Image 1 (cartoon, rainbow, N blue to C red):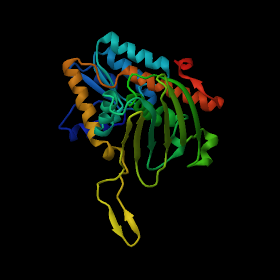
Image 2 (cartoon, rainbow, N blue to C red):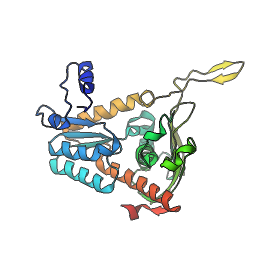
Image 3 (cartoon, one colour):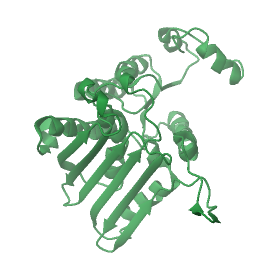
Length: 302
């Protein structure tokens, strides 16, 4: 379903004649639909989760599931009341490197986590005028906040201190643009973490993570398109990934495959509505921290 005439039909034809709608309500009323994938603009997600759940459909929702805690709570409650799975698109949990790091931390391979790091650098800031306020926290760093929780299993973020500015396009700062940010997070197990983002890495799409512990360290993420490195008179060079669907192709496939398995079996998804709410709490604490210029306790937000 897509409100733009012909958009859903074009995709349906590519998928082999799938039924297409311009009204989402018509899709949700279709008894042949067991599950929905919500990939609309971020600020419409929570309402669509509620509507889909009330229609008895299993729900996969792209991040962020909501942009306020009230929306998040309503979405979670709707899925729980309907007894349907609710999975959120935190795709780094399904990347082989990040998933392996999570399992090693859980197994105690690096001892007690002490320092963590997650970063997202997008390849290009195309049209800053179309970016809603606080996007860097609610739609970009939301991935990193979930990643840091994932890499520090069982720990809870308790305090946030954030800095943000418009360094890529300072001419849009007075319109609310923030294109660069660094966030420090303290967890209840004592671990300290940093999350950083920038909207324009000229060399490619850069996503990396790190966990330093009492018995070792884990790093994950590689922007190189392949392991080929060229050596020539101007030095060394490697081609870099410039698109998220190239870097995380296997992760996107794996998370949707996992969702279909949850629909079939009733198993709880690996990235739940509660995970989305927890990451949102950190994002909202970061926004308040930037606003007041000081640290914010996550519990004061949640």
